[in-house]
Every structure is written in structure tokens, then in C-alpha cells.
Length: 501
Ligand SMILES: Nc1ncnc2c1ncn2[C@@H]1O[C@H](COP(=O)(O)OP(=O)(O)OP(=O)(O)O)[C@@H](O)[C@H]1O
Ligand SMILES: [Mg+2]
Image (cartoon, rainbow, N blue to C red; front, side, top):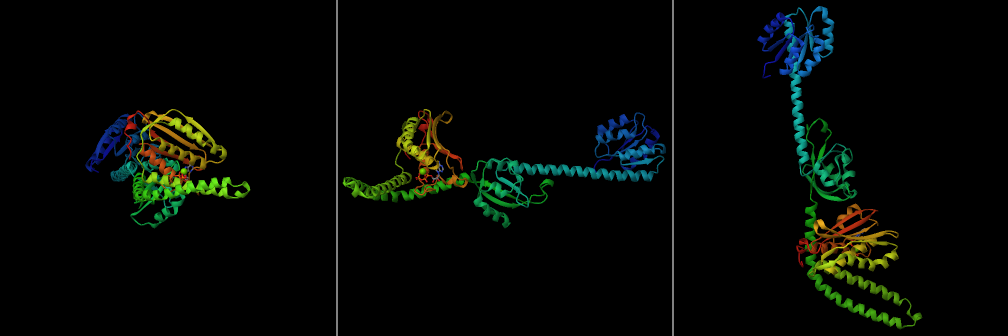
């Protein structure tokens, strides 16, 4: 101990106090003497003490009663009670109440010194423990701050892979609050079913520097792509973390991967574009010729007597349907692969949507679906035919996903805040499964027997060529809403849209 230990003597017997000072000062103590309980307390409050000798009989109160207040002012100090034979009982009571020991007058100097020394050892231990606790708390706080402020997801696991720690970044990325995740199994809570085995294998491999990419589930049932790293938990991170066996640490690479994937898609389409454009011409000419011939064939059949027609009209209809589908695939594909320049003119979206809904009403009626309009005025800048194709694709998707008795709602309104017109097509149909939402915009992704999988890819491409964007919300079994935001007319946002890309 760097400083001299402070010995506080609270005793109204001046001779005794001087005696004690003579004994302890040469032994390195700084001795303070106060003759009353009140002054003893003042001294303790002002400077604390390491050891106090307190007379049981004080002029203003008893040493026993003084004890708690005295210790309150110097939490690590020890108190030794001095007593005469007559008051031994109260000295014993004082020890029960927290005094270190008692000495009976007259006392032997050696005994007193031995008692004082053992009390001081006690004090030293207590001080050390306090210091260590403070240091530990400090390092824990530091560790927490580092974990909390990190721009990576840090998920702490116990030996059974139950989540024990979930840092702030993990909450930001997944939308889960820590208490929604802590105490739950990692795999079932944070990973989609189809990747759980793979993640479990990485956790079990126990190799250092094991890095792998896996989607993490968000609170809304979506996924984000995360690059993960499994790290064993070091020892001694703090008493309440002893159950931590390892960490999974991850970086959210969703945006990066999306950009990479879309760049690859664009490149692939661009490569195909040249080839496809040539091929499309080659296909389109005979296709049109075939359609024309079929038309003539149909007319010829119509001239036959009804009894002689047999299954021919049906066959003509089927072949015509297939040829038209082929033609649509061709033009969809060309639209994606080699987009032609876009017009930019004011387009009254509410009027266009009203017409489109009217166009789809007979089909909706046949399927037992209600089409709902919620249209308010909004004028966008762009290419009328292309925008029509966007909303057509969305309405068809919505109707195809909706069962008899369901509803498809088409709504539009201006978003003055970001100078756009927002158009939503919303259905209460089957919805899109969690793991699929990310894929639906990819060209050729389809879950339909006769689908091309180009519908949403075109929607996104056209929206983006207008300087707009597409948002999709879906819950399996509940429905889907796709919202397209297109720059509004007579705003700067509209004139900034990329021209004719
Ligand atoms: N409203 C919706 N509800 C549920 N699933 C949808 C909805 N819209 C799209 N999907 C899913 O996204 C997939 C891709 O849609 P997209 O429009 O790109 O192609 P498609 O409809 O399959 O074929 P195409 O539009 O070329 O005929 C669909 O196959 C379907 O699984
Ligand atoms: Mg479609």
C-alpha cells in the first residue's frame, strides 16, 4: 500500500489514546484521535480510515451504535471495539454487528498489534477485490461498446447453439430486437429452413477462419445475404458471458451481391441481345406467315358445313394460342435484351390504369375475382406503351395468384415528397414464399407451367429506365403488393431520369 494506513481512535480516554498512538505510529500508521462519536464520524467522513479502535463507552453514544455509520463512511475499513470487563457483552454484540474483533482492557500490546495486523490484511484484500471488480467492469464495458458499435453482426452462442448475445448491428440488419432472439436456437430463429443444415455443418466444423455466405431471416420474413465467420469465444470475457462458446460474426453483403448479380444479368442479356435480335427476326417472319396461314385455314374451316368441321376449329384455336405465346415471348425477350429508346411524354397514369382495369374486367369476372380501383390523379413522364406493359404484367400476376372470391386492387397516388407517382397492384392471393422473394425479378424465374418468367424482370427494367423503382411486399398465404414509383411530370426528378438508355 502506497499511503500509510489510517488508524482512527474514538475514545474519550486521552491517556489511552496517547498510549495507542505511541504503539502504532512507529509501526507506520497515521493516527487520528477523536474523543467522541460525533467527531469520530466527522473524521471518517472526511478522510476514511483503514482501522478504527472504538471505545464501547463514549460520552455521546455507545460504540456499538456508532459502528454501522462509521463503516458506511469507509466501506473497506475495519473496526476493533475496546471494552472493559463490565461491557464485554456489548463488545460481543458489536462483533456480531460487523466489528472485526474486540479487545478487553487492560490489553497486551502484542495481542493488540496482532489483531490490528490481521485487520489490515483483511482491508488490503477488500481493497484489491474492489479494484479488480472495477477493472473487470471497465473491461466488460469496453468489450460491450466494441461489440455494440461494430458494423458487423455479432451473435454469441452457448455450447448448445442458443443465442446469448445479439449486437446492435444484428438488430439493424434483421429487425429483431435482442430479446426476441436471445434464448432461442440460432438455426431455427435466424436461418431459412433450406440453409440450416449447411450452416450447422459450418458451426460444427470448428475450423478457424471458416467463412461462408448464407441468408439470414428478417423480422418481416425476408432475407438478407450475410458473409459469416465462426470464431471461438475467448476465455475470461466476463462472469455473465462464461456460457459463450463461440461467435458467428457477419457482414451484410446483400447490396453488393445484388449489384453483382444484376451486372452479371445485364452482361448475359447484352451478350444474348445481338444474337437474339437476329434470331428474333428470323423467327418472327415465319411466325407471322404461320399465323396468317392459320387464319386462312380457320376461314376455310368456317366455310365447311358444321357437321364436317369436327375438332378442326378447336385445333386451330390451340395452335393460334401457342403461336401468340411464342410471339409474346419473343418480344418480351427482345424488350429485355435489346431495349429500344423510350419515349418521354406526360402520361396520365390514373386514366391509363382505369382503362387497363376495364380491359381486365371480363377475365376477372370469369375467374371470380373482384377488381378494385383506388385511383387518384398522377401524371408521370415516360413511355406510354411501356408503362402500360408494366401495369399489365402486374395485374396479370396478381390475378394469376388470386383464388376465386379474392380481390385485386389497383391504386395510384402522387408522392409529393419524392416527386413520384406511386402505383400499387395488390392482391390477397397465395403470396410468395420467404426464400423466393429475392428471385422473382430475375429473368426466366417462374413457378408457372406456362410462364416465361420475364414479366417482373421487364417491370423492373422499365421502371428503372424511367428513373423509378419497384417495391414488393409479400406474405405467404396472405397476398402480395407490388408498388412502382415513376417520376412525376413537371418536376426536376422527372427531367433527371436517364434518357433513352
Ligand atoms: N402477385 C403475385 N403473387 C404471388 N406470386 C407472384 C406474384 N407475382 C409474381 N409472382 C411470382 O413471381 C414469379 C415471376 O413472375 P413473372 O411475372 O416475372 O413471371 P411469370 O408470371 O411466371 O411469367 P410471365 O409473366 O412471363 O408469364 C411468378 O412465377 C410467381 O411465382
Ligand atoms: Mg407474370
